[in-house]
Amino acid sequence: MVVFCDECGERYIIENNEIKEKVVIINCTICHNLIKISLPDRDVKNRPGSRITRG
Ligand SMILES: [Zn+2]
Image (cartoon, rainbow, N blue to C red):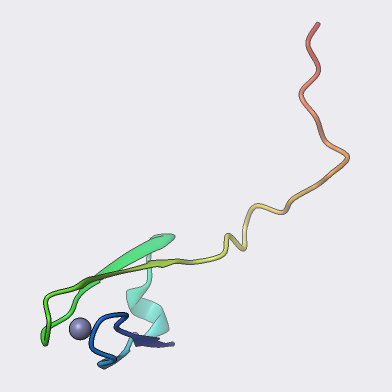
């Protein structure tokens, strides 16, 4: 996956096997901006029919 720094536009390539958590934070080596990447949750599916009912 390719990520661009918001501040300076530096490009970073993250290997998929390096991604172990849902949120990845990269410290830009050019401008020291913290690039925060939120990954979509593949394991948990949104089911609109499932609700918690109070009982
Ligand atoms: Zn940067």
